[in-house]
Length: 340
Image (cartoon, rainbow, N blue to C red; front, side, top):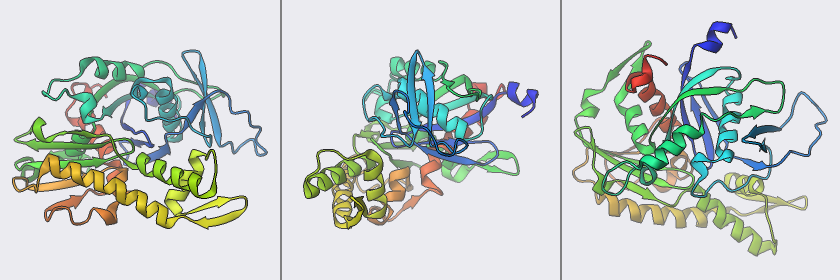
């Protein structure tokens, strides 16, 4: 890395979800890391010092361990402006190879956390999120921190709309006039929330937009409860439950156990909740030109949501739609794009 590259701010899209943190970079790279950290030092000595799996960071006098740890819950109200959030983001930036870089970033908040039901912005929450990421986070190694010099916040599902209507090609960007001219709904199935945004005539229709407190973390919780009941266990690690949801099996005391039926049941329960809220928000979508599904939950639940609307679509690499849209917003829409 040259001195010039360290000083020149690099624009990034930063989707810091409750389950995964995604980073979109101008060179087209997309980086994802689990949103997994806890307070305190790792307490681990690595056999191969060059291959650690847990990393330590300090912010505002508190040390956190990030990576292959038993992560603290992220699904609490103040997470977007918390130290836990900051160290997870710093770790994602380190994983993206951005150590020592000065960054301009756009991140997001769930729709209901960004807007009041009347459509007014929740300025206090937005400012807390905006300033939080500009507070220093120090890696407890010889690695330089990535520093965020400028940070803007947008509604998460609306970021996916920017990704949909701004088309990049050969280093240039253009608006897709056909997509821009028609009403569209974005359904963003995430970790803690499912967000809805309806855009018509480049305006957000708040009567059909909002958030449901339900997502893939609810699937994990139902699976965890089921495994604990079935095997009479008091506790389970978050990483073990995550693998059980992904693979449909759980390894306990050296033996693999099939829990695929439990995972399927948990997914169906969550899908039913999301489907009911989708119908409440969008009805049959008869006045919409398209219903676009995005988010990591869309990937995990793809087979369960294929026939909700005759005019629905799933975004390309849907888990990264918000991060890509945040980067496009920063580069082509945001007032700081020239400085970025």
